Amino acid sequence: MELRHLRYFVAVAEELSFTNAAEKVHVTQSTLSHQIKQLEDEVGCQLFHRIGRRIQITETGEAFLEHVQNALREVDEGMGIVRTAFDALSGEIRIGATQTFNMRLIPHCMALFFEKHTSVKVQVLELPGDEIASRLLTGELDIGVAYRPASLRSLRFEPLYNEEMTLLVGERHPFFRRRFVRMAELHRQKLVLLPHTFVTRAILEECFRTANAEPIVIAEMNAIAPMIELVSATEIAAIVSEHAVTRNDLRIVPLESPTPVRTPGLLWKREGSRNVAARYFASLIRSVAENENSRRQPIRRRKNRKIEK
Image (cartoon, rainbow, N blue to C red; front, side, top):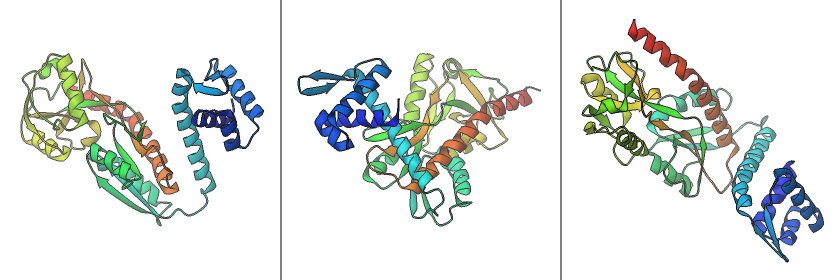
């Protein structure tokens, strides 16, 4: 399978006409038809129904189309980065990030970015996930870094990794020295959580239902920093990302049965081109996120062993 096969497939799928698609990709109709037949033979299924002079994409072809479009978009963007790799980047990047990622991930990426590209202005706005999605759609942002939204609409979500949520407790909490806590054990425990407007809250509520647990949500806060302060000053617990905690006086305890999991990732507007500087910054986010995620589990185990001694 070669790139031209995929480009020809997309052209036919968009035009639903071999004649029009052949003109679009600048080949003869017979050549295009032959190339599509080669692709179908290679994938082992029919991608189009031929009905006389009309064609119709099959269900398999429809499912294949989105993945091919995404792959070609990545290839084209990669080629753009390669072509401009030796040119000085310029312009502006507008990034929207939720609080968790704006605490460490985004500043780390900015520091790496400015080592090579000081002429680019980077604007970062800390926003809720739904507002990031809205501003991407209106063109006010170039990149979003958030958890997977409930609805993607005209956005594309690129997962970075799966992230486990953890219980955060202070030194006075009875779970402070625990190696792990089952969700059922949070029944009637006092918690501070994000409001129901956050996707994360919906994930946690589903976990509570699965474990038949009804915690006492004594407070709701729409920002992580004050939640952490509240935990440090009381016996109230919180459920947060491990990224968000840098204090040594607090304890991160893994949750089990079930483990709440979120999927952070990059958000892009599905249609339209992306500037080269934004694509380069996105590649840094991928790299830094992958490195941090690979280190996270060993760090957690070391913390647990230290507490148990």
